[in-house]
Length: 115
Length: 114
View (cartoon, each protein chain N blue to C red):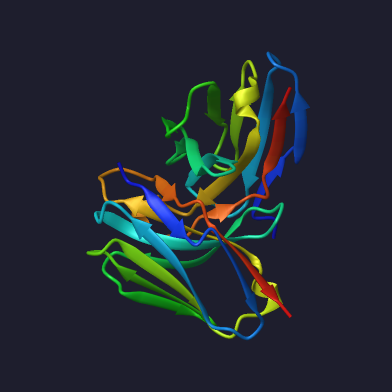
């Protein structure tokens, strides 16, 4: 029972490099999310996908792109990494959207450092 | 703009104590409130979800209450154990149409010592 799986667990990038963070869930959830967690800032929503084929911006989308590849997978891409993107990135999924009162399930995170 | 605050930021208690963690939010128009637990180096685990029409939810030694009008929620942990040591976060869902966004507090870091 894997739940939400994120890869990689750790990554170090140089400024200007690109990378894609992968996320997959095996719970047949409709909604998926990408958050970043920074000390003193809490979790902030980057992008979300309410259902397969749709994506929407969250609170801090600048510098990121996403792809909802299918119902299971939701990837986050950094096209040109900047030191301000050093953070811990969490993927989460939910059976329905928040308005349906179903709990959020999180992956274990990707720790990204941009030098 | 909805803001979620958790006080205290850190708490250290001896094993066996009953304790209360606080969460406050500035906009009472929420749809639900969730409490999460985060262990070091891990993701968040959902503990309790309270719908806006509910006053409280219970799971084992945990009890969460919600007072929308005053913008407050509390998480009560009975007979605390060292295994309860973790960071506890609350999050509210904005009461707007067609939104799936949770607003998180910055958490209370709890340490329960033997």
